[in-house]
Amino acid sequence: MQRYFVSETGWGTNEVTILGEDVHHINRVMRYKEGANIICNHPDGRAAICELLVITADSVQAEIKQWLNENVELPIQVTVAQGLPKGDKLELILQKGTELGAYAFIPFQAERSIVNWDKKKQEKKLIRFNKIVKEASEQSIVIKSQQYIAP
Image (cartoon, rainbow, N blue to C red; front, side, top):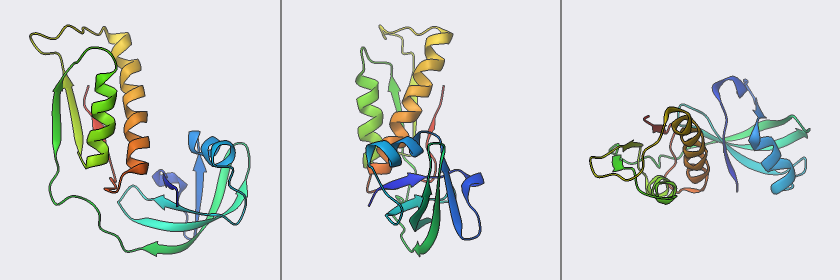
């Protein structure tokens, strides 16, 4: 069952509203129809099986059917500090590290790093990295309630 992270504002008493890129994923990529079930993760770490009620181009409404009693967080919070590698290697490190249960990542400019990001490029990279971490979290067996990539 596909898992989605829903922001705090998307949760009601018995329903969930999904907005943003996840709407496109539900509607166009997974091609879910009303009545399909998904897992929605709350920011506090809880998860619920939800049934899709209304799917539009801008939002998805789902009803909470059952709260899951799962505790798949690691007992410790692992932070990975990584010097900036060349190319897109950092994306792979973020993806696989998240799937293995890393809690946070700290990319840094090391003394011998070849890569040097300016402020504008750094902002674009952080947006891309956060997207990679979110998608890896949705597929991971170790579910995170929060991920953080330090600038």
